[in-house]
Amino acid sequence: GSAYLFNVAPFYHLMVHPLPLQSADDGKFEVRYGAPGSPTALFYHWVGPTGFGRLIGIQFADPEGMAQWEFRIPAEQAGVDLWFQAIQPEGVTNVIATEVR
Image (cartoon, rainbow, N blue to C red; front, side):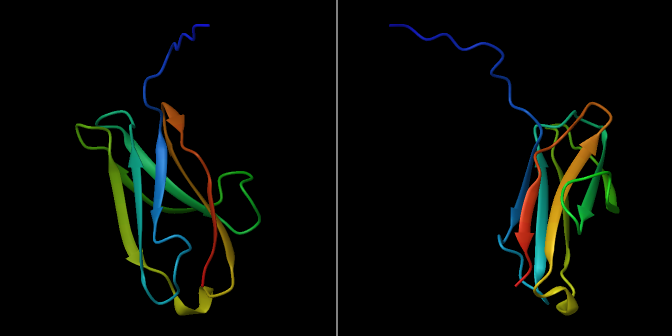
């Protein structure tokens, strides 16, 4: 048999490092395959991936469509479940769920 693939262009993709996030340590967030030059907003949610959550920050995607954030995860967030997602006017990324350890 044969298989044909269509529309295999990369899609908006959020990556989180480390996973799971560690309290009192740095978390790194990266959007890949976004629209070059587009404003990219990173959000977090406490109750699952519903609504827009709370804004962490906005970066403009570089010429390759990548946007990055790095910040310290507060120590008091240990044991908390969080969901992350990024958006651009052109689309949204996957959702990343993690428990902060």
